[in-house]
Amino acid sequence: MRNYTVGGPEAKNAAQNNLVEGDWYKPVIDRNTLKSLMSRSNGIAARDTALWLVLLVGSGFIAYQCWGTWWSVPSFGVYGILYGSASDARWHECGHRTAFRSRRVNDAVYYLASIMDFREPISWRWSHARHHSDTIIVGRDPEIAFKRGAPLVNVFLEFFAIRTVIAETKKILMNSVGRAVPEQADFQPAEEMRGSFWWSRFYILLFAGVAVWCVVVGSVLPAMFIGLPTFYGRWLMVIYGITQHAGLAEDVLDHRLNTRTVMMNRVNRFLYLNMNYHLEHHIFPTVPYHALPALHDAVADQLPSPHSSIWHAMKEIFPTLAKQRTDQSVVLSRVVP
Amino acid sequence: MSEQTWKIVSELNDIQHDDVVCVEVEGVKIAIVRTSDNQVFAVDSQCTHGRASLADGYVDGLEIECPKHNGRFNVATGLAVASPARTPLQTFPCRIAGDCVEIFY
Image 1 (cartoon, rainbow over the protein chains, first blue to last red):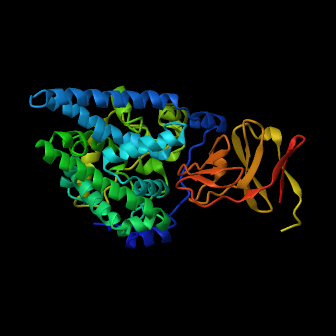
Image 2: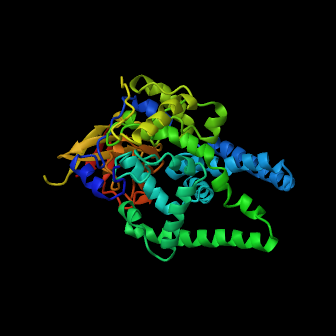
Image 3: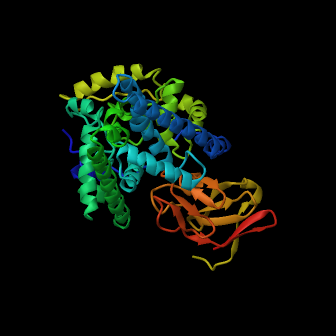
């Protein structure tokens, strides 16, 4: 299995092969069209965020009322998806600061969603910047979620955030005492560590506070609202996330070969904030989520055909991940126009 | 480098409001930004964070956003105003002279 350690031996190979901060493929698009697609507004994201929060609070209220009955299971199921899965898309869009026009509102939602995702917000901002610089470049990209040759049980564990939370907890504990984990130091400037240290201390206080609350009231109920949804509500985010890059090429400078666009219905696109247009997002990260369908139409003739559904994408992804267990040269190829 | 003078770098009409174009002066690529209230600014076109040309970026008021990582700079001061941008951009004096845009370079 390749060494995916960020800053490890594969990073040197990437540099020697001119894959670091490389010149990525870009489709041709009229500047006026792109300018129009890049334009920002607060209104659309305010509507979508308000709806998300109303559904979150509403499902949480119903779950609270139903606690102790079987009705709490579907209620927490919905709450968990909104907390543990839909938050990921809000984290992502507001991390790029493209959802709202207002930088402050983007940042506020980003920090809230970071807590829900159990991600320390400062280090993840830098991690994601690296992911966009060197997408699926082994040794450089810290966000390669589905590594070739990794046991498929890892995918299963990820549905419940097990490995992610273990890794993040380790980082938070180290950061809280003023130490960076080795991979973090590769993509996050030393001057930006201080913010991670303070956020890590806040996370420890927050989740320790929730644990104390549970002990005091003699019930797991507080943690069902804050903390545990990251585990029991994450599964849908993982399904979305698998479709982004899994099984596709590594070490290429063309997003058409390592990133997927998958058509989804309106409910999924609301929960996922149009990140199903992932290929278009990677090529033009300045285009807000609500303009991605129009961007898709504008450049569709220059990109591979999108998958028609999540199921359609899964049908190529899981057999490929299974084959990569024994043969890591297996890769899904793409026909580019 | 030749003696510093005001040099014509673009026709004003070649730059739309709230937009940016890239010009090359003595081998140096410079981004010329025209705001909605018809001010013009000149900054180094290379983002100080990642390898990207700000001439492909997004202009929002007095800020320009990098097309690669969404870092932002104030085009009047060159200061980085949104991460991952941290290091200021070099700025150049820039003015409208008749139908042209000039920079002092």
